Length: 491
Image (tube, rainbow, N blue to C red; front, top):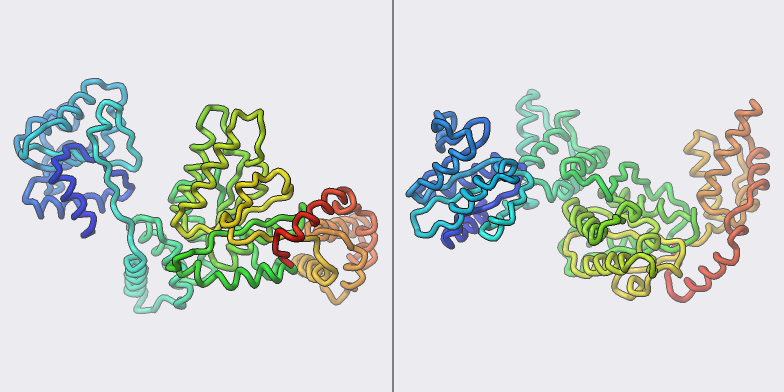
């Protein structure tokens, strides 16, 4: 709060008469402004449509007639003292009301040291053009990690006092992850989520992290072109990709600490459809205990000029608010493929994305996936855009065995009843997705025939399947040739 008070002091010293504060946390805004009024020895009055205009002693009698916005603003304008007037949600009355706009403008344009300051507060506030240039926008600082840790501990103490002295169960690693995942929230929202974590069972565990991230996503109101992926796979669910896993393990500590000068930026995964790129993206978030956001390029595009780029800028800003997080850009070539028929939209989208990738400071780890390398713009492939470019090839025989094992166990089938080596041999050229679908198809066949699931059904299903590597053999060969000397093999 000290920095907020200092910055507000500077705004008042500059004799700015109209201040805009966007915040959901009205109580914290009032606490800060009350401290400011006490420090400067000036009056503080608060207005709302429900209570009218009343003094700093809350619960006092409102000034007569002051619930009407016009009368309240006239009282402010007539005040000869240098007081603070805090108006909640006044902006909803300003639309197309010339008289109210004029009154606000008169207050904002007043000169001299003994003039009141009007402070407009709401969760989102857009001023009419007539008064916008006279306003100073101010944002309350978000809590630091030390403050967030203190909030969690305060809620733990409160729960303990209400439950006969029982201690909240947690471990230091989980506690630090919770604190990092609370970043970007206001003090009130962080306290609300910390309390909900603890009050359920008196414990803060790794199992609480996905629910915490989902609740944070909902509080920040990030729905739209960004989607929250609640089901993040564990790396145990990803067969192979040993080089990729090792590379990620080397960078996990640096990214999670968030203090390194050069934070890991992200990676680009190239490969055939169904090779496991999307699963790998989910697994990064699961391994690091971070929220996973999926950027849907298809929903970015808007027929109105400039709207597509604005949608992307807002999505990237939202990802920063959700940080630390993993931002998954699935099939990125579909959103950035350049063409002459889109009036330059794809070029502007590319420029917006490249600028953000170069300048961002927030810990947002980008995982981009692509199937068709020829459609990716060369500017995106330049060294430095991503920390590394990995090629995810079709799984080798040993990895196919692991994939069969994973999907059989998922469906509570004993792997001891199957010859995994034989299945791997027959599934040469299959992707991980095609292997999973073969297991599902064999299960359907067993149910239809009312027989137990067995090796013979699996082999029969595999032999009937024509994998994508055969259907699109030429395209896959070209992709492998391109990737041979330009990427790191993920396997």
